[in-house]
Length: 130
Image (cartoon, rainbow, N blue to C red; front, side, top):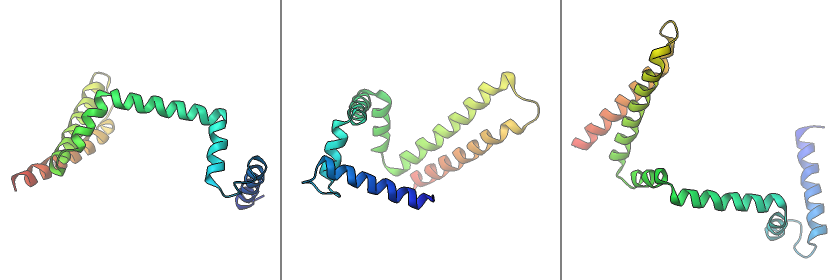
């Protein structure tokens, strides 16, 4: 059985079940599908998880800080991204330094991040000056 055949059978089975669950709504009705999903255990669990994530997002200091950064002009956002990339590269090297592997290959990713951070920060500073 090919993937297309499998998907065709799955869609047809779903339409048949929807007709049996809600014959007045029709096979392609979104309302019937949402009612069925809301009545299921998975739907209730997903709804509760979504509500918990929304509450956590509303109370999160990190999310509020990121929203304030997103509200800044593009140059300030670009500078923020550059500085955070530089900080991440330095933290990576600082954490790896005591138990560094033999050779220099472990420095490639921080070097790329450092280069990117310097480039983005310098472009932001140049754009900030005019």
